[in-house]
Amino acid sequence: MLDTPLTRQAGIEVPLICGAMYPCSNPELVAAVSDAGGLGIVQPVSLTYVHGHKFREGLRLIKRLTAKPVGMNALIEASSRRYHERMVEWVSVALEEGIRFFVTSLGNPRWVCERVHAAGGQVYHDVTERKWAQKGKDAGVDGLIAVNRRAGGHAGPKSAEVLYAELADLGLPLVCAGGIGDAPDFVAALGLGYAGVQMGTRFIATDECLASAVYKQAILDADEDDIVLSERITGVPVAVINTPYIQRMGLTAGPLARWMLRGHKTKHWMRMFYGLKSIWQLKRSSLDESGAKDYWQAGRSVSGITSIEPAGAIVRRFRDAALTAASAPAGSR
Ligand SMILES: Cc1cc2nc3c(=O)[nH]c(=O)nc-3n(C[C@H](O)[C@H](O)[C@H](O)COP(=O)(O)O)c2cc1C
Image (cartoon, rainbow, N blue to C red; front, side, top):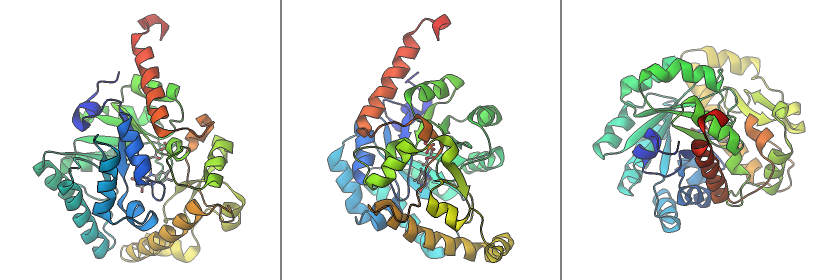
């Protein structure tokens, strides 16, 4: 169960990815997951803007904390030319610093594939449905991260089972993202045929994650019915904990924003506006210990998360559960 196309391509021992999280991916968390045999993913805006590292220095800090592979997230939405140029530079620096595994989200991953493949690396692409998966395959990606409807961040519309059935014949390794909170969920996803799992929310409630104690406690306290989708953060639905602050703000974008999001030209402006606003708001609320602005992203996996643990202990517990399941007699599984 632990030897999968993902572990082979990424050079890791446990098919478990700590997904990129703006603003929760800090170098210590990324390194801890990789060091335990999983794969931590660097989120460049989180590394630089939230956690205050120069990009290359942040990568070097991670390399001092672990000698094992780490990955990088390239959000390639092209609504701003400046952002795109910055992302091109970040990918180049990451390659120079030895990163060989990339997770792309949103736009067309072709340029990332070209650069990364030239350096002998791999690109996995986040998708929520077949249309985007086919686009990723046409662009040359090596694997797909199937983001289901239980995920934190930008959740998709489909269940893990439906998405697997929809994407399996594309012939690429599939990673399950969304709703995995504890080891039995991990084993079940591998049992479905997934080559690995990408988790976000579970890794926020860890010793190494620098998110505030109130945010972590809210994840422990929340049940899956407390997760709602808000359009007010980025203009597309994002999973958040339904706190009093979220209730006051409402979940839908206002009429002007909706109109602008529909227009071919105006949608890029609106997304950029939302992007900049949310980058600032999410940074503030994830680090603010007072909990006054309780604006916290989390997925439905909260229901399986009951304690704050070291990230490495989670990776090892999940690994052991998969090994136990794999060694159990077939009829008893
Ligand atoms: C707080 C938070 C921030 C996220 N930020 C990003 C991001 O910047 N880029 C990205 O590709 N995915 C992002 N995601 C999605 C995760 O990488 C991962 O796919 C998702 O969390 C899996 O669902 P889970 O939270 O149920 O484990 C984020 C998720 C969370 C919870």
